[in-house]
Image (cartoon, rainbow, N blue to C red; front, side, top):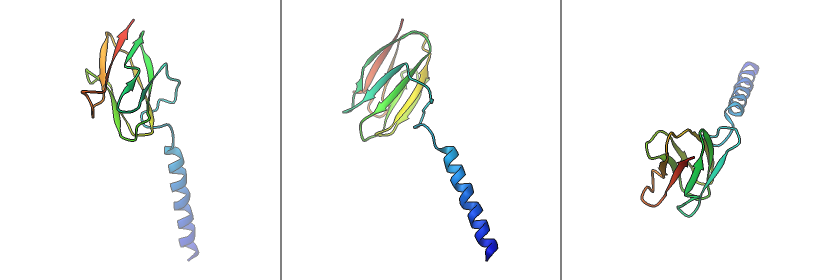
Length: 115
């Protein structure tokens, strides 16, 4: 009986340590500071136009209750963002490019201009 309790205690400790190790930033989180922020609210991106110069980290904050995505039009970057969550992506576009939400592509879109 004592051996079972010891085994159970070890298993609980392993599960707790494992879950603590897997905890972290929100999905796609880079852990760093974003250069720009895009907010999703009421099925719209804000802003819908960004100007970048080279590699840029963007935080996407989804204030809606449904999942959205930030997807570059050439599909080189795609990040789902659950409702109420945020994520970061790093982009390095060579030229101006559009982005959209995979789930609402006709109404949720924007443009990135490279300066």
